[in-house]
Length: 432
Image (tube, rainbow, N blue to C red; front, side, top):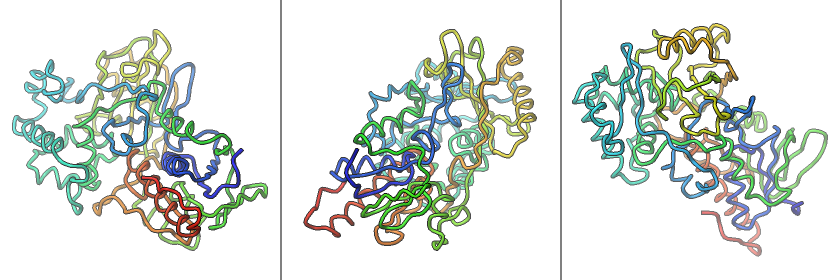
C-alpha cells in the first residue's frame, strides 16, 4: 500500500492512467480511484465464449505521437491491418490501397471504378503531404471535414463512396461535420503508420499502463461521491486526502462533481456520437484479407457502416478454428432486434448465405462513444478548475486515444508544477 497520496486521480480510463503514470514516473505518490471493476473506461475488452470482443469496434494507430512516447508496443503485441480498405459499392468489393505500401494490389486500386483517376491522384498527394508534414502541421481550424474535402477538389463520388464510410468508422461521423483539423491529423496517422489491434484486445492498452503503477495505487469498485481540492469522499464514508485531485471521467460525471462549473456538460463540449457494434461468431471468415470493409453504397443500402474480420488481423481474438466479425452501425438509439435483422440482410448481400449461420455473440449500444469535434478544433488543456483541482479526458483534447493520452500527460505536467510551487522544498522533476 502506498503512503498517503499527493494526487488522487478519479477515473482509470486512458486519460487518468496516462496522467497517473506520468506523475508516478516523476516521483509523485498517486492514488487512482475507479468506480467500475476494471481499468480502461471506454477502452475495454470482454471475453465471451472464448472470443475477445472490444466494447465497440476500435483500432490503435501506431503513428500516434503520444502512444510512441508512452506505450510499450512490444508489450501490446500489435497486429496490423493491411493498408487501405475494401469498399462495398455497386454489388462488388473495390480495393483502395496505397500502391507504395501495398504494391501487390496497386493494379486493383488503380483499376477500381469507385472513384476517378483524379481523385486517386488527390489521395496520393494528400498522403505524400501528410507523410512529409511535421507533428501539429495539420489543416487549420474553421472548416468541417466535408468542406475540406471539397476544397481539395474531391468529387462527390469519392466523398460519398469512400470518405463518408471511412471517417464514419473512425469518428462515427458519416456527415463529415467533424473539424477538418482533426480529420487531417487522423489521415496523417493512417498514412504514416498502421491501424492495429493488440493481440489480446484493445483493453491491453489501459492494462499495460495500470501495470506500471506501484502496488496499492489503484482502487477499483470505489465510487467517488464528492470532490474538493483537498481530496475525495468515497461512497460509504471513506476519505482520501491529497494535495491535488484530477477528475479523469467523462463530461457528465465531471459535471456532477463540479456543479458550480457550467462549462462541463455535453452541450458545451458539442455532445457525443453514439454507436452500435455487433459481434458475430462464425466457423470460417467471409474473406481472408485483414482489412477494413466499408459501406460505399450509403445508408440506403443498410445500417452497417463498416465491417472487420477481427480474427484475420489478430488471431487470438477468436478460439482456434473460429472467426470473429464485427459490424459497426452509427448511432446507439436503434431498436436492437430491427438493427440485427437489417444488418444480417445487408451482410448477406455482401457475403452470401453463410451469414444466416453466424451467431450473434455480443451487441454493444454505446450512446457516448466519442466526443464530437467541432470546427474550432481540439480543445486546449485548461488551467485548474480551482486551485489543486484539474480535469482531463479526450473530450478536453481530441476524440482519439492520442487525445486521451495527451490530455493526461499535459494535466500531469500542470499538477506537478502546482505541487512544486506549493511545496518548493520537495520539488521533483516534471513529467514530459
